[in-house]
Length: 99
Image 1: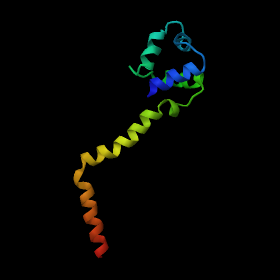
Image 2: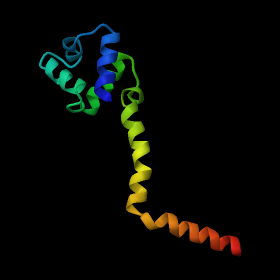
Image 3: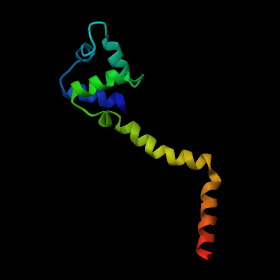
Image 4: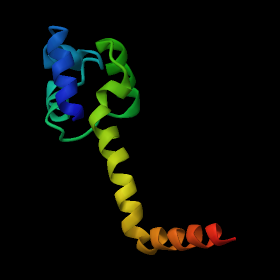
């Protein structure tokens, strides 16, 4: 998940949560970084871009698990939403073969 990837990358770079908080200025706390690492929320887009640049990691890599989950989940949701679609397509294909 995002939080695990963020924490792992921060540790690979030898940075503390305070160091990461410093990316965003004096008024930013390490508690926010801790929250992200515990998957308690996500940073705003601007902060994501800063994190990716400063930690030298792509957003794709940070969100790899979430993206994979969505790719796997969407077909199932689609079939649940339209249960007769598959059967209808099969009937259509069978009829095309008769033409």
